[in-house]
Amino acid sequence: MIRLSTFENNSFEPFKTLSKESYNSLQDDCTVIKNSYTQFVVFKFLQLNIKEYSKFINQWSDVPAYKMNFAIPTNIHFVLEANRLILNVIMGFKFFLDNAETYLKRNYGKESLIATDFIKLTNDCFDKSFAYRFLSKLRNYAIHLGFPLEVIHLDINFNHENPENSRHTFQFILHIEKLIAEKDLFGSIVYKDLLKLNEDFDLIPLINELTHYITIIQKYIYRVEGVTLNEAIDNIETFVGNRKTATNEIKVYEITESKERTHTLQVYDVPYDIITEFKNVYKNWY
Image (cartoon, rainbow, N blue to C red):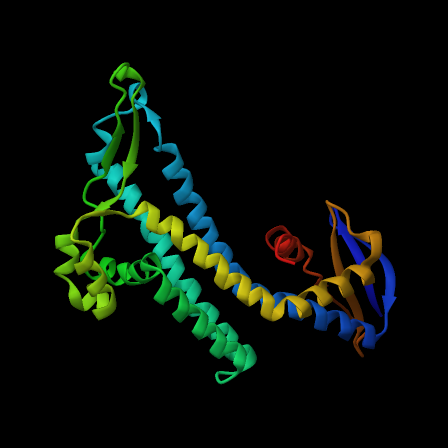
Protein backbone atom coordinates (compact mmCIF):
# COMPACT_ATOMS: atom_id res chain seq x y z
CA MET A 1 0.00 0.00 0.00
CA ILE A 2 1.31 3.45 -0.99
CA ARG A 3 0.19 6.44 1.01
CA LEU A 4 0.71 10.17 0.81
CA SER A 5 1.27 11.52 4.29
CA THR A 6 2.17 14.53 6.38
CA PHE A 7 5.16 14.06 8.65
CA GLU A 8 5.62 16.09 11.83
CA ASN A 9 7.02 15.35 15.29
CA ASN A 10 8.30 12.00 13.95
CA SER A 11 4.77 10.95 13.13
CA PHE A 12 3.15 9.98 9.80
CA GLU A 13 -0.43 11.09 9.21
CA PRO A 14 -1.64 9.55 5.93
CA PHE A 15 -4.28 11.44 4.01
CA LYS A 16 -4.37 9.80 0.60
CA THR A 17 -3.86 6.31 -0.81
CA LEU A 18 -2.04 6.25 -4.13
CA SER A 19 -2.23 3.89 -7.04
CA LYS A 20 1.05 2.86 -8.59
CA GLU A 21 0.23 5.06 -11.58
CA SER A 22 -0.41 8.12 -9.38
CA TYR A 23 2.75 7.45 -7.43
CA ASN A 24 4.83 7.25 -10.62
CA SER A 25 3.31 10.53 -11.84
CA LEU A 26 4.14 12.23 -8.54
CA GLN A 27 7.68 10.87 -8.69
CA ASP A 28 8.10 12.22 -12.22
CA ASP A 29 7.14 15.72 -11.08
CA CYS A 30 9.46 15.49 -8.07
CA THR A 31 12.29 14.32 -10.31
CA VAL A 32 11.85 17.39 -12.54
CA ILE A 33 12.26 19.61 -9.49
CA LYS A 34 15.20 17.71 -8.02
CA ASN A 35 17.07 17.62 -11.33
CA SER A 36 16.60 21.36 -11.82
CA TYR A 37 17.89 21.95 -8.31
CA THR A 38 21.28 20.39 -9.16
CA GLN A 39 21.96 23.50 -11.27
CA PHE A 40 20.04 25.96 -9.11
CA VAL A 41 22.04 25.07 -5.99
CA VAL A 42 25.25 26.12 -7.78
CA PHE A 43 23.63 29.47 -8.59
CA LYS A 44 22.54 29.70 -4.95
CA PHE A 45 26.10 28.95 -3.80
CA LEU A 46 27.38 31.82 -5.93
CA GLN A 47 24.68 34.14 -4.56
CA LEU A 48 25.65 33.28 -1.00
CA ASN A 49 29.26 34.17 -1.78
CA ILE A 50 28.16 37.46 -3.35
CA LYS A 51 25.97 38.21 -0.35
CA GLU A 52 28.87 37.66 2.07
CA TYR A 53 31.15 39.80 -0.09
CA SER A 54 28.53 42.58 -0.35
CA LYS A 55 28.02 42.64 3.40
CA PHE A 56 31.75 43.22 3.84
CA ILE A 57 31.79 45.99 1.22
CA ASN A 58 28.76 47.77 2.70
CA GLN A 59 30.32 47.67 6.15
CA TRP A 60 33.32 49.63 4.89
CA SER A 61 31.63 52.04 2.49
CA ASP A 62 30.92 55.69 3.35
CA VAL A 63 32.29 55.29 6.88
CA PRO A 64 32.52 58.40 9.10
CA ALA A 65 36.10 59.44 9.72
CA TYR A 66 35.86 58.95 13.47
CA LYS A 67 34.92 55.30 12.95
CA MET A 68 37.76 54.49 10.56
CA ASN A 69 40.83 52.67 11.83
CA PHE A 70 43.57 53.70 9.44
CA ALA A 71 45.68 50.67 10.33
CA ILE A 72 43.10 48.27 8.90
CA PRO A 73 43.88 48.63 5.16
CA THR A 74 47.38 47.20 5.65
CA ASN A 75 46.48 44.66 8.33
CA ILE A 76 47.45 41.28 6.84
CA HIS A 77 44.46 39.49 8.38
CA PHE A 78 42.03 42.08 7.06
CA VAL A 79 43.58 41.99 3.57
CA LEU A 80 43.37 38.19 3.65
CA GLU A 81 39.66 38.37 4.47
CA ALA A 82 39.06 40.75 1.55
CA ASN A 83 40.97 38.44 -0.79
CA ARG A 84 39.05 35.43 0.48
CA LEU A 85 35.72 37.06 -0.29
CA ILE A 86 36.86 38.21 -3.74
CA LEU A 87 38.11 34.75 -4.66
CA ASN A 88 34.93 33.13 -3.37
CA VAL A 89 32.99 35.27 -5.85
CA ILE A 90 35.21 34.73 -8.90
CA MET A 91 35.71 31.00 -8.19
CA GLY A 92 31.97 30.63 -7.65
CA PHE A 93 31.36 32.49 -10.92
CA LYS A 94 33.55 30.06 -12.88
CA PHE A 95 31.89 27.12 -11.11
CA PHE A 96 28.49 28.53 -12.04
CA LEU A 97 29.37 28.99 -15.73
CA ASP A 98 30.94 25.58 -16.23
CA ASN A 99 28.19 23.79 -14.33
CA ALA A 100 25.40 25.56 -16.24
CA GLU A 101 26.93 24.68 -19.61
CA THR A 102 27.33 21.01 -18.68
CA TYR A 103 23.84 20.88 -17.18
CA LEU A 104 22.20 22.21 -20.34
CA LYS A 105 24.25 20.02 -22.68
CA ARG A 106 23.48 16.86 -20.73
CA ASN A 107 19.79 17.60 -20.37
CA TYR A 108 19.09 18.96 -23.86
CA GLY A 109 22.00 17.72 -26.00
CA LYS A 110 25.39 19.20 -26.89
CA GLU A 111 24.17 20.33 -30.30
CA SER A 112 20.73 21.49 -29.15
CA LEU A 113 19.53 25.02 -29.78
CA ILE A 114 19.29 25.52 -26.01
CA ALA A 115 22.96 24.65 -25.48
CA THR A 116 24.19 26.66 -28.46
CA ASP A 117 22.09 29.67 -27.43
CA PHE A 118 23.63 29.48 -23.97
CA ILE A 119 27.12 29.62 -25.49
CA LYS A 120 26.04 32.57 -27.63
CA LEU A 121 24.68 34.32 -24.54
CA THR A 122 27.88 33.90 -22.52
CA ASN A 123 29.97 34.94 -25.53
CA ASP A 124 27.80 38.04 -25.86
CA CYS A 125 28.31 38.85 -22.16
CA PHE A 126 32.05 38.39 -22.66
CA ASP A 127 32.06 40.74 -25.66
CA LYS A 128 29.95 43.44 -24.00
CA SER A 129 31.54 43.66 -20.57
CA PHE A 130 35.13 44.27 -19.52
CA ALA A 131 34.10 43.29 -15.99
CA TYR A 132 32.85 39.91 -17.22
CA ARG A 133 35.98 39.34 -19.34
CA PHE A 134 38.45 40.42 -16.71
CA LEU A 135 36.92 38.61 -13.74
CA SER A 136 36.61 35.38 -15.71
CA LYS A 137 40.39 35.58 -16.21
CA LEU A 138 41.35 36.94 -12.79
CA ARG A 139 40.74 33.43 -11.47
CA ASN A 140 43.67 32.20 -13.60
CA TYR A 141 45.88 34.95 -12.20
CA ALA A 142 44.98 34.07 -8.61
CA ILE A 143 45.47 30.31 -9.09
CA HIS A 144 49.00 30.79 -10.38
CA LEU A 145 50.19 33.89 -8.51
CA GLY A 146 48.12 34.13 -5.35
CA PHE A 147 45.76 36.74 -4.02
CA PRO A 148 45.31 39.84 -6.21
CA LEU A 149 45.18 42.41 -3.36
CA GLU A 150 48.27 43.44 -1.41
CA VAL A 151 46.75 46.37 0.48
CA ILE A 152 43.34 48.03 0.61
CA HIS A 153 43.07 51.67 -0.39
CA LEU A 154 40.90 54.40 1.11
CA ASP A 155 38.89 56.83 -0.97
CA ILE A 156 38.51 59.91 1.23
CA ASN A 157 35.62 62.31 0.75
CA PHE A 158 37.18 65.14 2.75
CA ASN A 159 34.96 67.73 4.38
CA HIS A 160 37.07 70.91 4.49
CA GLU A 161 34.73 72.82 6.79
CA ASN A 162 34.29 69.97 9.24
CA PRO A 163 37.09 67.40 8.80
CA GLU A 164 35.56 65.20 11.48
CA ASN A 165 32.58 64.72 9.13
CA SER A 166 34.74 63.34 6.32
CA ARG A 167 33.70 59.97 4.88
CA HIS A 168 35.90 57.05 3.88
CA THR A 169 35.29 54.14 1.52
CA PHE A 170 37.52 51.15 0.81
CA GLN A 171 38.74 50.50 -2.71
CA PHE A 172 40.15 47.21 -3.98
CA ILE A 173 42.80 48.68 -6.27
CA LEU A 174 44.64 46.39 -8.69
CA HIS A 175 47.97 47.58 -10.08
CA ILE A 176 47.99 47.62 -13.86
CA GLU A 177 51.76 47.04 -14.17
CA LYS A 178 51.55 43.74 -12.30
CA LEU A 179 48.62 42.59 -14.41
CA ILE A 180 50.07 43.38 -17.84
CA ALA A 181 53.19 41.43 -16.89
CA GLU A 182 51.08 38.25 -17.02
CA LYS A 183 49.79 38.15 -20.60
CA ASP A 184 49.56 34.36 -20.72
CA LEU A 185 47.25 34.25 -17.70
CA PHE A 186 44.77 36.78 -19.11
CA GLY A 187 44.73 35.82 -22.79
CA SER A 188 45.09 38.15 -25.74
CA ILE A 189 41.65 39.82 -25.55
CA VAL A 190 41.78 40.79 -21.87
CA TYR A 191 45.46 41.66 -22.19
CA LYS A 192 44.56 44.23 -24.87
CA ASP A 193 41.90 45.61 -22.52
CA LEU A 194 44.50 46.06 -19.81
CA LEU A 195 46.91 47.83 -22.14
CA LYS A 196 44.20 50.39 -22.97
CA LEU A 197 43.58 51.24 -19.29
CA ASN A 198 47.05 52.60 -18.49
CA GLU A 199 46.11 53.10 -14.85
CA ASP A 200 45.28 51.19 -11.70
CA PHE A 201 41.59 50.39 -11.18
CA ASP A 202 39.10 49.42 -8.51
CA LEU A 203 37.77 45.86 -8.45
CA ILE A 204 34.54 46.70 -6.60
CA PRO A 205 32.60 48.27 -9.54
CA LEU A 206 33.59 45.31 -11.72
CA ILE A 207 32.12 42.79 -9.30
CA ASN A 208 28.98 44.93 -9.05
CA GLU A 209 28.63 44.78 -12.83
CA LEU A 210 29.30 41.05 -12.90
CA THR A 211 26.27 40.35 -10.70
CA HIS A 212 24.07 41.83 -13.45
CA TYR A 213 25.36 39.31 -15.99
CA ILE A 214 25.04 36.41 -13.55
CA THR A 215 21.34 37.21 -13.24
CA ILE A 216 20.95 37.40 -17.03
CA ILE A 217 22.48 33.94 -17.40
CA GLN A 218 20.33 32.36 -14.68
CA LYS A 219 17.22 33.97 -16.16
CA TYR A 220 18.03 32.29 -19.45
CA ILE A 221 18.21 28.90 -17.72
CA TYR A 222 14.91 29.59 -15.99
CA ARG A 223 13.26 30.53 -19.30
CA VAL A 224 14.46 27.23 -20.75
CA GLU A 225 12.90 25.07 -18.05
CA GLY A 226 10.43 27.41 -16.35
CA VAL A 227 7.28 26.01 -17.98
CA THR A 228 8.16 22.41 -17.14
CA LEU A 229 9.29 23.36 -13.65
CA ASN A 230 6.16 25.37 -12.85
CA GLU A 231 3.92 22.62 -14.21
CA ALA A 232 5.62 20.11 -11.93
CA ILE A 233 5.19 22.43 -8.93
CA ASP A 234 1.52 23.04 -9.78
CA ASN A 235 0.89 19.30 -10.13
CA ILE A 236 2.43 18.58 -6.75
CA GLU A 237 0.58 21.38 -4.99
CA THR A 238 -2.71 20.28 -6.55
CA PHE A 239 -2.02 16.70 -5.55
CA VAL A 240 -1.19 17.58 -1.94
CA GLY A 241 -3.88 20.23 -1.56
CA ASN A 242 -3.91 22.15 1.71
CA ARG A 243 -2.10 19.48 3.71
CA LYS A 244 1.28 21.24 3.56
CA THR A 245 1.91 23.62 6.45
CA ALA A 246 4.85 25.75 7.53
CA THR A 247 6.02 23.11 9.99
CA ASN A 248 5.32 19.71 8.46
CA GLU A 249 6.83 17.70 5.61
CA ILE A 250 5.07 15.74 2.90
CA LYS A 251 6.20 12.18 2.31
CA VAL A 252 5.09 9.10 0.45
CA TYR A 253 5.53 5.82 2.27
CA GLU A 254 5.07 2.26 1.16
CA ILE A 255 4.90 -0.78 3.42
CA THR A 256 5.67 -4.09 1.76
CA GLU A 257 5.46 -7.57 3.22
CA SER A 258 7.88 -10.32 2.23
CA LYS A 259 7.23 -14.04 2.06
CA GLU A 260 8.79 -14.30 5.50
CA ARG A 261 6.15 -11.82 6.68
CA THR A 262 8.67 -9.14 7.50
CA HIS A 263 7.61 -5.58 6.73
CA THR A 264 9.69 -3.00 4.94
CA LEU A 265 9.01 0.73 5.08
CA GLN A 266 10.16 2.84 2.14
CA VAL A 267 9.83 6.62 2.33
CA TYR A 268 9.99 9.14 -0.52
CA ASP A 269 10.25 12.87 0.20
CA VAL A 270 8.17 15.40 -1.71
CA PRO A 271 10.69 18.28 -2.15
CA TYR A 272 8.76 21.22 -0.73
CA ASP A 273 11.97 22.74 0.62
CA ILE A 274 13.27 23.00 -2.95
CA ILE A 275 9.92 24.32 -4.19
CA THR A 276 10.17 27.09 -1.57
CA GLU A 277 13.69 27.96 -2.76
CA PHE A 278 12.51 28.22 -6.36
CA LYS A 279 9.57 30.41 -5.44
CA ASN A 280 11.67 32.78 -3.33
CA VAL A 281 14.17 33.37 -6.13
CA TYR A 282 11.98 33.08 -9.21
CA LYS A 283 8.89 34.87 -7.91
CA ASN A 284 9.72 38.02 -9.92
CA TRP A 285 10.92 36.09 -12.97
CA TYR A 286 7.62 34.55 -14.06
